[in-house]
Length: 156
Image (cartoon, rainbow, N blue to C red; front, side, top):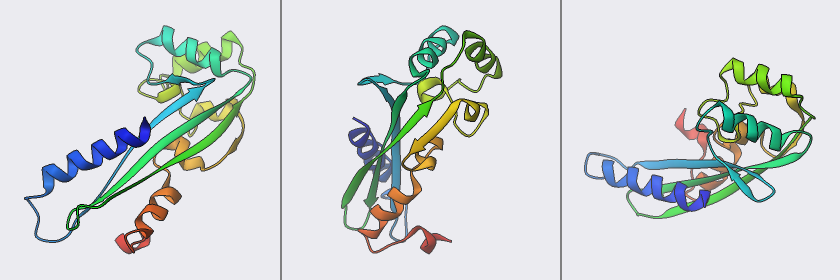
């Protein structure tokens, strides 16, 4: 799902800028979700849903799954990959969850948390790219760009 959405976003963006360019452009797009026991945890619609998500993640592991796509406008070639990071959260009390909800950090976050913020207090360990949980899996992006003989460091 995240791979398909990342490709769709990258292709749509490429279509929007294709005619408005004087040099080759490479478009990078991504999509991320949180999986817990196979259930997709997107962005919570409200505090109640955020509480339910955080309770589901409490005391266990879950996966942060990101699809990344790269489109080269000159060739039209598209490459994509998926990054998976497993996150283990400690047991959360109802007080922990309410405190976190009160921070407001859960708003607009898949799985109702931001590992780079106050939720770092809840994370016991991770396996995989930390930046995948924060946002874009940079090592995965760099590997994809390598398929085009490019590297992130080429872009300054």
